Length: 629
Image (cartoon, rainbow, N blue to C red):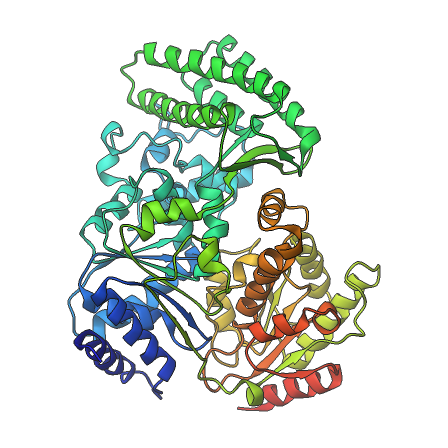
């Protein structure tokens, strides 16, 4: 055992010994040792760490001891917040090593002080553009909050404001002209976060922002030696979005709207908006479909007209002269937005080798997206060849290294098991007798099962849905049928939902994909996890369809669809048992888990829970848990 490995184990034990009722987790020790060895030797590592291993401390301790600049890229902003609020302060207190950390999110997550300043007219009154009274009041509240907050991060707020209110006082990455062109750049919350990141030893981001950093040519995050991907199974899906681009009528009209705020001549933007509508109409018939490279001639013609109009407007913006500071900032934002739009248009107008073009959204609101067919080449060039990378997740699909272009030669691979007694403490409930997911009886069945199981559990439920439609229907129905609070992301921020759930033992969370992972809800507060359906990807997803063709139809389900479903299912089930004393039920209301020939693959991805098909047994198990003090 090397010195680095020994030091990591000793430091980890020192930290965990401070926990109340501390328990040594061999898997966490093995994980920490393996990462310390990899960092010392400069080798990449893939670590599958079962639920309850304590991944966060398992990788943070050796990374901090290693002493090199480290970026931790999590799957969600919720997990970012967990590291920032819990794990890193704990290590700062008990590790015995002086280190600093910073959290960085995308610009739209922070309130923009310049936008706040621009909300004031010369008389000091707030001006609202096409807003309701409710949104106007929200903006008022945000303006007041901007004077008090130290981070400007909207996640600080107890209740998340509406999207329209947030957009009124924030900027997207393709709008902001940067610190040097902004009169309040020195005080900008997003820039402050980036300044802190420059000085920090550990920088916590999400994988989406890391992908944006890669797409920008490495211009967003500071130089770093080590990158740790937590929930690494998400890399391919997230990079597919961030490394590609999107064009829509909404994006075009958003640019036109920015221009109108600084130029009174409507003839400049009228043609652009007309072409934006024409573009939407041109791609609408292809909604949900892939497109060839180069694009069909009618789409190329429309995009060329849009490109000409954008160029004309950008030239006109350069000629605008003003002594008004607020107007000048609007000009800068419009110019930046236009330049980003041109970059996307040029990609779409060319022969985009290595990209998949497809139309997503509804026929009424379609958008053209270009995503890389394979993210491996991008990652190898920008990450694997220039950084030491640690990839960890509770479930690492066997095909993941190949999918993300990480060569196994020279890469450490380790699997550590969960320390929890799943067979005794948990039940997996599914029956072949459940109605088919496509039958008219399925939705009423789901609502009945929810009512019975939640009642038996006394609340204490995380119900996860594979579609927003199913989520909204169940939330509305069950609020009428059970006496327990049902918390929904449509009402509160993620952080506030977690806080309210932990404060009220009888509360329930009804959520969708964002709560499948990165949410830690230990203790008897959570006794029941319910999934309405197996989380398979859509069969008509154009990008996945292209990837299925690339691997061959005979292998597509095994290499593409099944690993995605198994990983997502395992992540969702992993929300249940978070400590050695936790007990509960995972209920999957989809009979495919009991009837299809691939059920063994899905079960193998899950913790070794005792399986049952009897609801009465599950209800009694939940009542017994509830009765325990």
